[in-house]
Image (tube, rainbow, N blue to C red; front, side, top):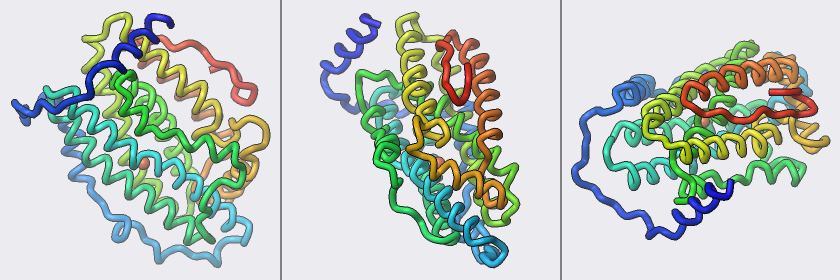
Length: 311
Ligand SMILES: [Fe+2]
């Protein structure tokens, strides 16, 4: 790890990134990423028009279920919010460092808009269910959300490919599979409509990550691969297994209130998954992601968590 640290320090000492605009290369280069951009344009939606808000029937649910859903969906807004500063930060970084291709830049521009819609929907559904919660009650749990992903995306010592592998392929990948599970178990028409839209957007976001990595993998040296693996291991150990997406992985009982809320939200069909369902989702994600990473020459270490077991 010494050489990785030295490389990072070296990059930090380099002059600030400068724009080299020309030539622009607006023609498609990464055709698969350009087609994700085209799909995103076609899939454009509007939370106001496309979610049947008026169909929400408060009377159909017990008071406790509504309070639980308000909390589950507030927590979702807390993580979705992270995508708003993060996406433009990656976009700026790619604009300044990779002046050869426009496809990832065009795709990320649309993704940034979609992130705003995700935040809006989660916040609005929490309000509808009983009231959006401004912040986690437990300060230790709240700290987990203060990751400042934009800072890391901007940090010249972290190579863009490592950022995309860890934060898009891993973190957005886990997020997508959890949302697919929430969608499978949602019976409420409004929660279901929101989850369906979010899953469709997130499928593109995650595909972007893997396609981008596959395009870039040919250029990786062993040192670059070691850095990417280091970043992947960091987000798994310090964020995902610390409960960034799954509250039941948070150490101790700092997020117990969220875990209880998610169970009740799931039982009412208001758009969440049980601990058992999330456990199955994570185990499958780890198995599939490990195979996909191996195909790119990346082999992150195994992990052990008292509540999840070995992944
Ligand atoms: Fe999002």
